[in-house]
Image (cartoon, rainbow, N blue to C red; front, side, top):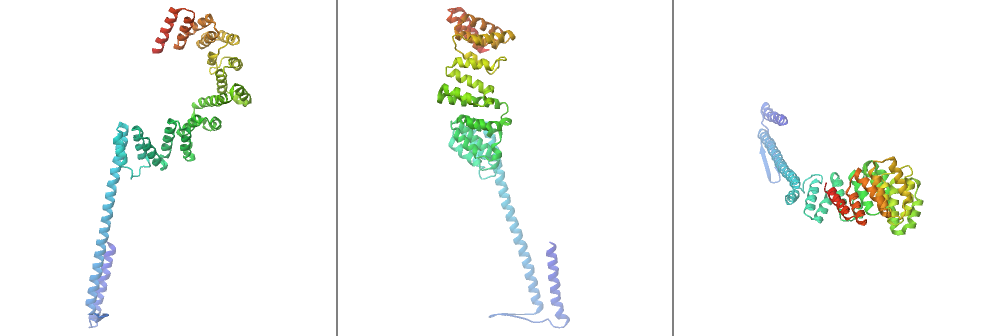
Length: 391
């Protein structure tokens, strides 16, 4: 506005000067303009007035044009703002419908947000709705669209990997997780799924190599997976190469792994699975010279030896040191039962059920008495087992 006032003042001063100057000298001046056949004849005063009018007209037109342009921009911004608000309402409605279980409404609302900028979360909502509607192809397509946004890439890839694992395609799950950047691959959901996928793919050696890097992330699951790796590696050797190679493989393992409880339990399980019960008894007793180990003790229940004297002696020794340990009596009952010593088995199991009754124990007692032709006792123990299962 100030510039306009200054410009008008300047024009006025020029006009006054043009009019006043000729008057002061007694001559209004003469102006002749010729452009081809076009001729303009006027006085200096008239020319000044025309120039003044032209400048004023130019200023007015400039102002009008400027305001028109601003009004147009404001209208465009208003329409754009209205469109964004509409998309935001659709986005919130899609999330609400998803939580309510209204998959059709969630899908419809999510489709209205596709041209907006929601960091890919709108595509995640659409994918979840598609999964709920059992439209896997649509879900995969939406998740891949969501993966193009940095903020939703982790959620999208993890979901795709989880779907691949559920579909028994661990290699595909590993590929999806491999598309994440280095930081995203270290996130807990990605790490846990990668561990599951490696295990499902039987990549036990690779999983064992990577597991130590995820100890903090896995927390309590680290020990579980460590044992699972041992089972997987030993089971793979036993199934492909047999019992002899299994023993050779065990002997060639580093001492650290042979001293690991998880590996020891897995090795004993494989020996039992291969029918090498005598070897299993030997290693189980050698590893528990100083007393029973919770991870190894239950494995004695699977021993099937006609004369498990060393195991019975060890169990009786441990029972003398801990007479209120129901697990020790239960294990002794199983060992004696499989050896055909029904009297010792009945005595041990009776004591175990007195200390800590379990369905498993009652049912074994029922089976034991059935073999001894004590049908009434067998039925009573069976009923106890059923009652114990329902409580």
